[in-house]
Length: 400
Image (tube, rainbow, N blue to C red; front, side, top):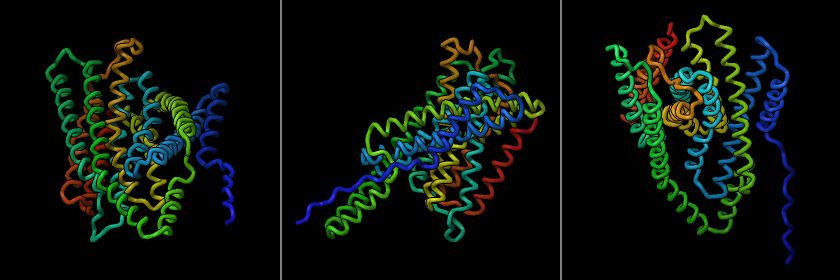
């Protein structure tokens, strides 16, 4: 019997996102020491920021894929955690805006809900249709509608309170740190419950996969070998050690921090260079920039011919921006005030902040209704969603 020849490890090959991240870091470092004024400097900051955010997002996702391989998570649990960590670049970006202008950060976090809602509706148009309808993944139907209902109801109550305080000349003219801490804590608690519910709902799928593997093993060694090959292919290019996972995670966080700093400088340039733009228009532009991580995930999933995973990520983007990103934004504003960093600077109750909160309700209501009736999107619902989101963004950016 001949001895088995040990497999030689394949040489390391830098992925494309690695070059993008490295290039962004080098450019950001150069711009830190060589200050360029005007549009040229802002343009280079945009390139550096987008490269850092896109590359760090990929690093975070690959690190989670490595965790899935190490801990035996199924693809749904791994995808959910990947969607969560992909918000780190956006949270880092908002952190810089919170330090510079808490009200602008508050509005940007809310505007990103509307931009991601538009992305969700637009991508749903690309889904394969069965008699004019596109199916929605079951976990979204089961847990997503409850999340949308609570988010819409909470924002309606908060907006109603803001309107009453302003209309009846109340001495309270801003949302204070205690209120922000309560709202942020409540949103984050609900989000964590949502994640637990999603994982619980995926157990049935995991059990089905386990039974399929056992049946394949019983069928013979060839099927078993094929499964092992498929498993290796599914986790190709991801770190196989805990050190590699942690290293990529730290690299992604560092890139997120640097990218957020670069894009915050771009935001300052837009505000100072275009004073004629309304505050909400600037917030919309910055919200689109902050949504780059979500667009990266959706694009990758679509290129890999996994439309339902892409749709799940777009839905995760529009819900996580309220229950995760917005919650952490509120907690950061409250915390920085308590620490004395912001010096009692909170969220003013004005037209921009009130409309941003109020319009979450119709956005989430129509989404919940479209999902829960039959678990599918038809053309009427898709066109209605696009019309509503376009109208809401038009109103929000109209001289407010």
